[in-house]
Length: 254
Ligand SMILES: Nc1ncnc2c1ncn2[C@@H]1O[C@H](COP(=O)(O)OP(=O)(O)OP(=O)(O)O)[C@@H](O)[C@H]1O
Ligand SMILES: [Mg+2]
Image (cartoon, rainbow, N blue to C red; front, side):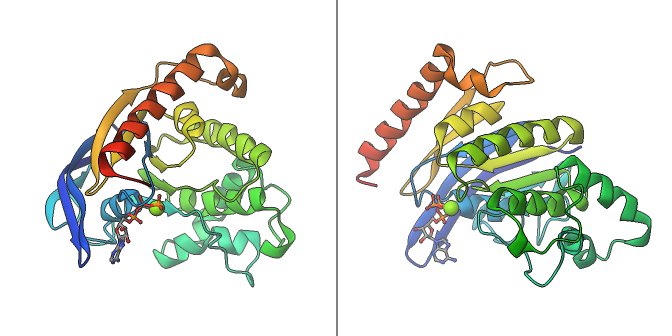
């Protein structure tokens, strides 16, 4: 298990600065969520952690290793459905392993166990078109977990799901994470999702993107969905809303 250390990352594209001196640590096994207004650089930050994009300044470390180029320790789960329609659930789930040239024969049982773990037992031979949105995101999660990454990078993975399915997936993700010992960096626009999942919530400001606040979430685990309906939970969400409102006011519009 390895943690993530982001140190002094700045990044500009042609149209100006996107990230400015962003630093934070995610300890090994920690679940960190990132919230912030649209365009503040969340996806860019995640891509830099993954080594898909390079910072202009600063560095990212995963464990002791400095990231330069695509990081093998990381696996990415996107918002968009990135399944291949002509492949079955099983074949989609093994795609990441194929791309990394991991031995499939010796990992077949493990992949089967993973599909069980994410709730896809019995769906191995289904095609994506035969699955609901929630099930499709479970396949994406299985694919990411299959390469046994130290770090899961998740960019609004549940954004396209309806409210009930989304809640179920949040609870499922926590259950799965509890068995898997992964460091998670998870981006969301939904504050209750950010608080429910996280050990820590980072609030990003923008123009350019900075970490405006770093909030520890005190609730015990395992967490029931009913936690979201408690007063303490509501108060923490309110506090984060306040920070985001300030950020938006200070940086103008949304
Ligand atoms: N490859 C690129 N080339 C030029 N500009 C880019 C590129 N990638 C991102 N940007 C710009 O960087 C800024 C931050 O984009 P990014 O996608 O990281 O924001 P975000 O916080 O993830 O937004 P959202 O919440 O809407 O997903 C935006 O202004 C975007 O247009
Ligand atoms: Mg984004």
